[in-house]
Length: 361
Image (cartoon, rainbow, N blue to C red; front, side, top):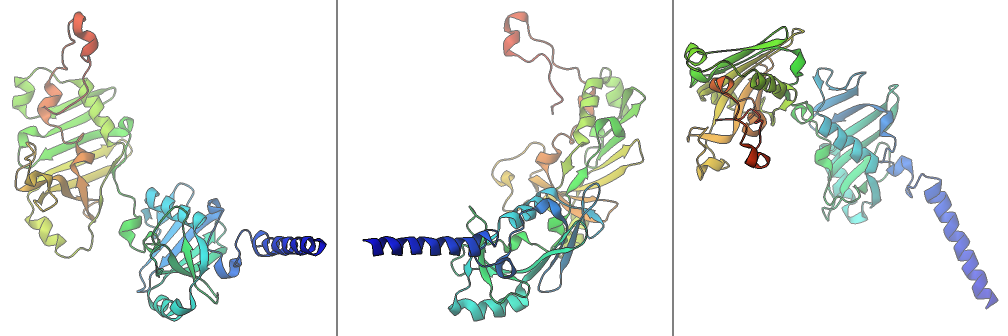
């Protein structure tokens, strides 16, 4: 009995020693940080990321005083940055790559792996590792620390799959997608010119404390005076408008834009010299188009009802935009010369709104 108790005590001490030296001393990593230290707990200390694919494509993401920048030229997409920083904080080694898979994994990573370099705010290297493809069971990612002997299967807790795509080297995945970002009180003027129906075009300009709507003369004389409340509300819609994604470099895109009918052009001018000019074109009907089955009264039947093409940033970028994101911008001139809906009678006032926001008619 005493011998059994003694053995149990010895086993307990051995177990504690293993935990203490392999896990506690290694920050919770049983394989050691030099071999499998893929996790970076303090992502707030990160100042720079440099990611390079096997074919040489790369992105440099750096922290500045005001924001994160990509390739020293473009503002970084916040959602993409947060995804990568969260991944760095959570990714953990599950186990070394099996002996049977070792040769194939190493051979594949030698040519196809993505190299990730992480630096702190002072420019000191924090970590360098290589990201390969999916593990055999598709529930982890093959990864290798720089100068390590063995690749490991790495996983983000709660995520089933592999994380290679998160370390993208495509500039279009990292670039901020802002089209308009100017507060209402900083707007000098907004103009929208509809190519197919010029009578719907208009300009709203600020004149000290007033806003002035200019449109087709027939509207300005045929309808009652402008609705300044609607005009002021309209200027608020340019504070945060984004595109769905960049189309730069896609084959035949130049030809597509040249042959696509123009929908409109928009100009937003700020009080401090900001100017964004956007050219918008119809997208041809395709198999994803909802109006293949249900017609949209605001969109010609030959064109997609959800998405359009746009050229922004002085003609440098071709992007895809969504009707949903621009629905508050695509208003028509006559709407600014309509009265708001009249308040309902007292007996039904609780059931009817007395003040209606700007809407399409």
